[in-house]
Length: 367
Image (cartoon, rainbow, N blue to C red; front, side, top):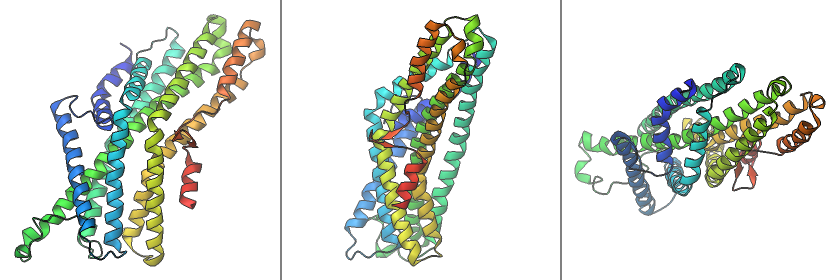
């Protein structure tokens, strides 16, 4: 078994947990994972209905921090639900892409130099994924706790949901009953932030593997003139690997197509509310938190799309730098085919139309 495949098998339980959570596959994997997935979705569903109840029982709607955060939290729960709903229908594409990734990790090269390239990029992408998995969950979990903690001790925010069977006047003098709704709100926010970042980490994992495959292809292209002397069919292998990159890029774009446009819309709404309140309450910590959280909804995906676009554009530059004129006439014809493939624009697209990159994110922020 290749060393990179061993590393992949070690990380496979985490990968399966994240992707099954993304596709709403509640009862696959170990019991602990099944319990966590059910817990995430159950708590978020309850939170959604309690926020909706709070909005319905608001007799006189006034634009305030409480109403703002309630609406934004309501949109966040809707966004979470829609993303896992979309993931459910994208299950086959995600499984196919995961199978292609696993096949990549299972590849072996007889040539020592090519084997090192394959191993280095595969293992590096797994290391980056594990860093984001570990620290992403910690940061968002703690962030959810700190936000709800701040809401508790700032009277402008208060409760963003309603518990009808707890809000009795009989308990207003009881310290535990008074704090109980805020404790529950704390749990709700930690759950929604953690479960949401898991969806992003799942897409990040798939994107990192596509980037790793592009890097492998790029390094193979750099060795074209050297390796084609030893192995006459080396150019054909590059064509095959290039087709695999295009297939996986298209799969990833289809997987993120609907959810990405949703994230960009939510980013625009959150930034709009945040900037509006920032003008009125310039020194409010909550305003900056809203802007950071709003940007965090769409920024990671746009950064991933930017990296993929840049890496894909480098492929054509690498081909131009090869001594293609030294190839045999038959290989030169095949080289032109590869060059034509590399010159096409590749990347993620929101709703199949809009490019997902940093330029798109800047445009959303400006508008």
